[in-house]
Length: 294
Image (cartoon, helix red, strand yellow):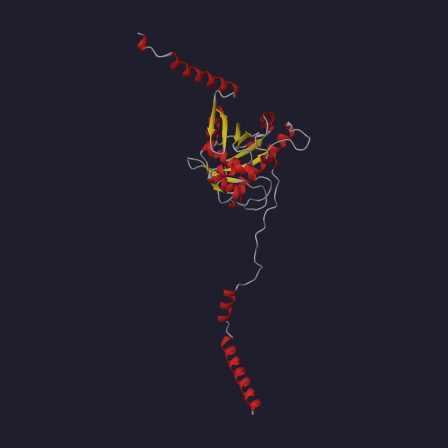
């Protein structure tokens, strides 16, 4: 009966919504993708790469996976308050220098959202022997407790020269070799597994990096997981200028504070003799003053 029928107006909105969602997904190339929405950003990764990222983060194998990041806020200063606590700590704490503060903080936020990672050590909290040589940017722990090192770099066109496959291969080879070195020399964390997080600002550069990764020998890629993230709406990520590392003020060698000097004075074996000499000098000065009055 007519009274039992669902009104056409009640059916149409649902159909319209479905069409709108389908159209938007098609225009965004969103089919088969995982979207992560966070206060500071949104991250898109294919379902396949999301699965590979989780699996290879704990496997003794190397692979390259891709993702895309869109920040919210327009500029970096507007993004910082929206970051999670670990990313804000990476941003706020002193590092070893270089133009990498934004890229490292944003990297921590992406890995937190993609892998549920938490920060274990910042750059200067990791210790190495010997101390000279490449170092890791920070260390994270996954939900299962596995600790991984993370090295962050940026791949983009320098000056007028466009990024090329040879240039991308040289960059990857240098960073992967540095990761192998820091894994061997870090002694306060087990960094046998690391992530190389590469930022780039265009889809063409992502394709070049994938080609270049195929040219890198297995002796360099080893078990490193390479995560390439494209970010096109945060210019500061690629224009950040390096700062010289701040030098910590160190006291002069052998310099003693007042408490130390007082303790030395109390323990001096000549102190009783010094007291007697001072008393005699005081008496002689008093006698001299009396004779002068007479």
